[in-house]
View 1 (tube, rainbow, N blue to C red):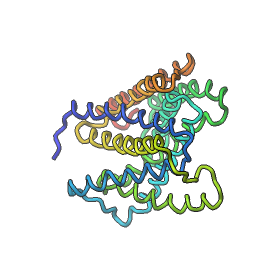
View 2: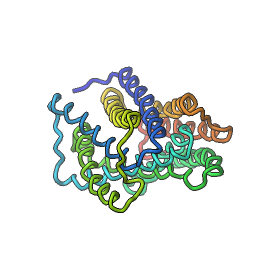
View 3: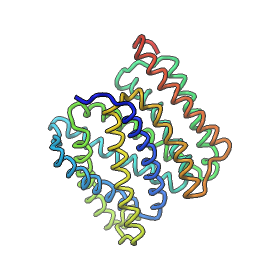
Length: 301
């Protein structure tokens, strides 16, 4: 039995908030690399790192037969989420893309109400509305500059909300590291024939050109950072409850802003900056409200 150690859990979540936007920054640096190549290396490295960890720790990695279909669907959603974010980063500043994708918690609340009949009262519904408003404030200047590609992170948010819903279904019956390791293998198995077809049909995004030495370094980095981010989040939840850690996830936005400024010399304009603050405030309120409801009357919101 693992005893709660909130300080350790918070430290691990802070590590996630540092590593995740670093991975997004590397993805932005790889914008000239075909998407299919990025995905294949990303998930291959995930399996390469996790299976030895599972073997050393003697963890259970096999997926129950009845859940394999959901695991495959979860993996497809994971790939699509990374693909849409990768595409959005080709057009948007890092901070804007990350902030827009943070509409995901609000979409998740709504999807939970629709598909899982989870309670969502006027307070949390209001937080969703304000959060969406903040996201629109971030999208608007980017939409003026680049048009429809500014909406790619919104697609990322929808996809990852569905990803989280499915993860809730399979998490209780699977080991988290085993699930991610198997997902890495499933992703590679799905990607290899798709990339083969892409080669024959000359689809630019599915080509496999020989990476340069610099691209190899970035490709290895994105695989390592993506896997490490997942491990940090998983381990943080072992030592502290999600209610304690959820507010910390919003640190990812200012950290992404700082990285975007340092690496790409990009900084949100005034409207986008205000939108980021509104989105963060609405998200933190939703987290606070969730905690209050759980401590008092679960039926009310």
